[in-house]
View (spheres, rainbow, N blue to C red):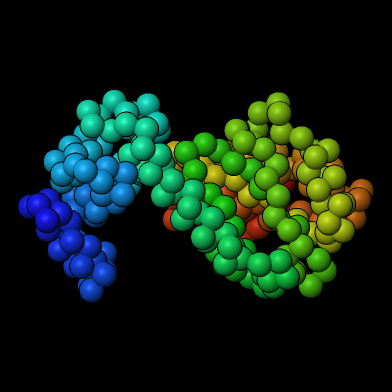
Length: 226
């Protein structure tokens, strides 16, 4: 066993015995990169990534071309790094289930936030519920700005009707990191509320998510003022 092999085994054993919190950031990335670059000393590359991007979060949020701009990062290493966020998101979503009762704004926000985990573009979802606030389904309405011409009131109505929803919650994220609704967000909310009203479907809320925070238009009084 070579010097690097011994180091790898010690690092893996430290993780298995004590968990990820026992490792500094460079060793976390080093350990991860072992599985993409099995024959290389990955510590210098891990340090280079942190120096280039500034943090583990920035490394894992970086797009493909920016990752491959770092010397030593090829398709295999980039694919592994790009896998972490969507895999984590899939894990979080798998813990949510149809039939969950959302009896409070906090419960709604906590249910919806995983849908936006690691998102680097704006996503728009429609959460559909029955008369008892049980989840019937949560569907992606579109990718991109909620206030763009591509936002389809008809699609939202069709989704709500197909699930026989009594009420819906519109949700989208702000990639700026600020969860406060914009004036254009208010206008989109009003348009959707007016489109659903003749169908006897209540727009119960519009939740704006940013990072680990969210703002409820219903709780904030914005929905009543529209």
